[in-house]
Image (tube, rainbow, N blue to C red; front, side, top):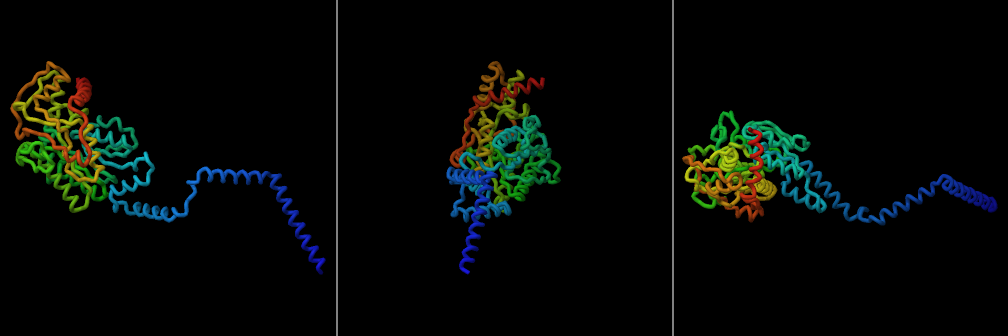
Length: 419
């Protein structure tokens, strides 16, 4: 019996040995062993050279928590503030990688300031929707962006509601020059029959959009809210000295009301808002005949016409170049501060001093023509920008003598085209 068991055991060992030899012969014959060894060597080399790619057990729980948090943000995108989202993104992204591009709407984006703002937003990688009725804006200001897939242009009056899905709203839509806002003052401030674009209805609609989609809203107000100021220079805490029934009041009071609405939506509806008070701004793409003093002087000097000075020419203004203003608007929008903030150049010039700079830049033989002053024309206008310098770390960089030649080049070409 034992001999039978021994023979059976030897037979099993013999069969196992035969199978092993057959498997080895198969692997050698078909080169399978070579492939297995090569795969093992490659895998080992990979993890030896790049150990950081192998997941660490201690990171699994935190990774799952992060995925859960990201799912919560996706499911409820409006619960979290933009500032918090930006700070979280900054912590997650490697050094040198910017945050996720935004979808931004710019009302009045075909205008002078708006088109320069669109340039900056597109250059940094955002998607931009321009909403403009072309009352004062020009398509030519945006023609160089029409082929950009991140750019959209909508012809629309902001007096009518519009539905858009955006992250930020820059509200610039408003006639801002005396020629335009005096042409139709009701159109500038408000019509209760909703017939025209207005400061008030346009601002209401854009604030309503910001509330619906959780967007951050920036209102471009004006130094005109200070009226003919009794304080010099003007600080943001100054409440102004405005004639509510004067020829300029449609613009002055319209912007003051827009500021009121903006703050009421912030306090009552929790809308994230920013308010910028813009002082005199100049640069390329200004309307040639918009009644503003810099564009008037430059266009008249280029056309060999006398430069028109109203009154005695001793009233003062401060002039900032458009790129400085755009930098200030974007800085304010990205900051944590509401405002209002004065955005202007504190360099102060009388109208006669401005005329002299224009003569030196364009034509030393240009003449000056005096005319009676207009009603409610402010005698002094100079921003106190200490608040913007302290909190936003912003201040203008381009002086009048540096910026004026850039504007003159643009006006020269357009006046030649006009002829």
